[in-house]
Length: 59
Length: 455
Image 1 (cartoon, each protein chain N blue to C red):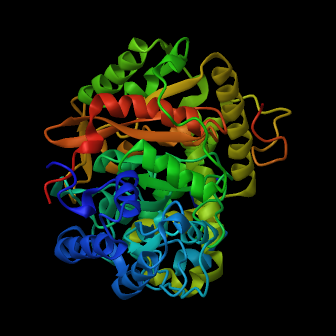
Image 2 (cartoon, rainbow over the protein chains, first blue to last red):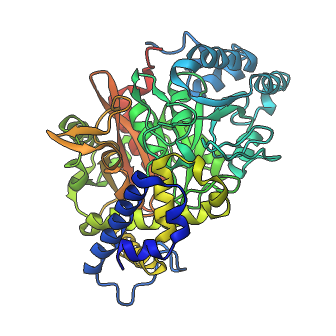
């Protein structure tokens, strides 16, 4: 996914009066979040459940 | 400034002693904090809503009770962060276009009220608590009582500033990513981010459910412990200082976060650690290998959850948000479920690593903020000679520990050019009493609890 793809998926949000500066900021914010998500790909997540699932904090 | 010429400068423990001995009335105490609020209000902007009449009425009621009936916080004036409901007072969340008028107290406020506390008013907050600096374009900025040209830290800015400056004897704040700890550090207070779930969040505007907590801001560890006991509904046992109890205590120093801070902050934390060593603790470096991923996990989870919280009113209110908060919420709305779940799975690895580390250490130490309070309106700060963006810098030491789902106490451990800074004491879930004992020992060394800002 790219920020372009994601923005196209929510045209209404993009069009809602963010203005040129706002849209640039939004693009940068999405790109930053995508980069952060990609940075987690180095972790071995096989068999790992989300933190909010019941097993909770290990004893 | 020495303590106790003015009742507004008393700790809760000292005020309670004076109240019980009838050397001070609840009305005198409330009048003292209201006088401060009136005098300092325009300069510090700690309160978004003040209920002087209601507070004085409750104080008169308290004074009519016999001393033997007095609850633990009877007559004690408290400032409540304005994302927490107080019956009869507006909850604005520091927003421009959002407000509610609750008919009942948040669960945490109800506990304070049952314990006799007097809710003086609603404290300043960053817009929807989504900030770390105490700045608010809609309601004005909150200022640091040690230097009014500087930031208070946030987002529990009002409760922190009111407590530090004598406009309340303590505050109730919330901490999603350091929003109790950062202002506690910058305003010279003790702040507790409790074990998630220990203090009810019912009646509080959420920011991000995975991280939201509520807890006290206080002038000393004794007051913070008393407040936490009331807020949690359970006694926090063993707060009395017993230095011998530190013999063999395994204290880890999170060097990764020490390295993020200015050298004077790092020195203050290490001096506090050496103070604990003098009482028998064993100090060693500690390292969380996955800490470098904390920011990625945190920003993804928080953006997505905050967007979900705001979903119900965002469409009708979007033009009334400040640009930075709106952009975060717009971006959060566009995050994929896959990205959110990847972050939540990565968070589990961080929590599991913390559990393994805390099997070898009783507590971990780290700076709370990397510097003292920055001036208002700066966009960058200098740390160890390098320029850093303000928001990531203020989050740099509090964000990682937030991921671990552990309780954290921030306690003042030093000052630089007259401005305070704090240290985080981090322990396994349910270890608040131990954390407060350790923080209490550091507080004794630093003596910050006896200082008051020159207001």
